[in-house]
Length: 161
Image (cartoon, rainbow, N blue to C red; front, side):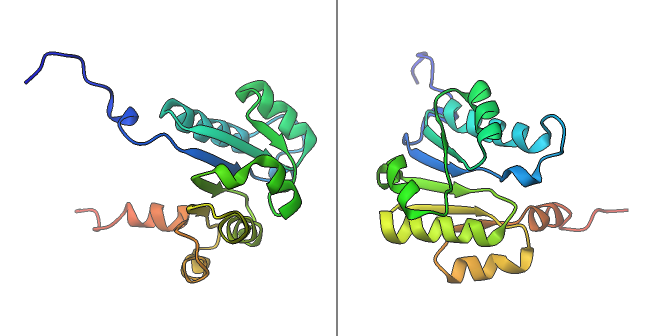
């Protein structure tokens, strides 16, 4: 065995180009910035730390401006559900797209367009209504993640009393 320093596990995988459709402005509290921006920024930071190239798509100007102060020039302002805008982002070069809006329909539309029109290989959705997970999978979304299901699954097997 070599004594040479090993690269951290987070850097071992292939570098990917990832597009991310951010949660819409209407989810935010009326004053200041809330938890959603922090979660979005943390997810992007985690992807960047792992060596991925990330483009964050944000529809609302004020939120895009704030996210740009946190994340830099990776933020693009526009609607991730519009083919014309997605074409401007260079999404056809993306290896994956992650849709994390609070609207399942928007997430599904963005992911289906990315896969069908731009041939993005991997599509990942935050699914807000757990009953939609199987529908997303049937409609071609590669990974459909329901926070509700993840949290409920964390309780399995039942805790010993």
